[in-house]
Length: 253
Image (cartoon, rainbow, N blue to C red):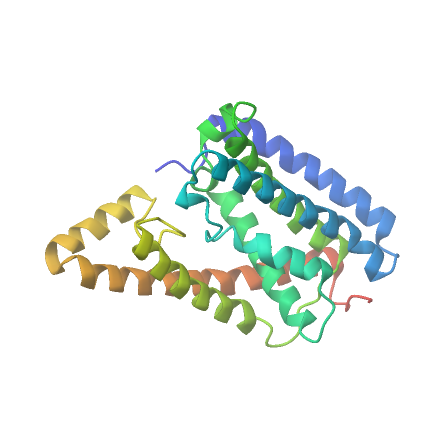
């Protein structure tokens, strides 16, 4: 189990440095601007993510379509929630904002800690050789930039009890993705099998002991609970980052 590869160190660390500089410069430029103005960089990133996904789906269809390209992965949640946060202004905008920000934070944390789980060294070395490599690396890096900009530009302030919205959302998602994973034999969010070798070995050993169906039911329940716990942690990680950068003040809208 390798968290970082040399390829990740050579590319992701410099990218994070660039993203930090961009975030600092935009904060200095826009921090006194109205909320609608500070949201513009987030809207731009959201639009780019959607365009990248449209390209991915189009190319996949042109090649016969790979079911793994269905956007039901954990990171794919950002594809839906970030544009909603960027452009939705309805009655439930606070709940939408919280869900989106927490999942952006979760992807940032996962990529920062275990980038080799998110995309492999082969995606990096083949970045300019295949659109899917280009998409997966660019997508996750843009999400990391989005997290840093959300914190730097102070575009979302958590309210008391907001944590429950992303936690419930991820629970529902895991049920849906778990069912679909088993129906079409495709591994979304590790709900079909585990991409972490030691844990996959453990899952297979339990299959040998109690059988496939009971193991999978137990496995999906455990993964769902872990995802809910991780989402709860991501919410509090975002609160900590925002407090360190912006203090306790409420954002101006």
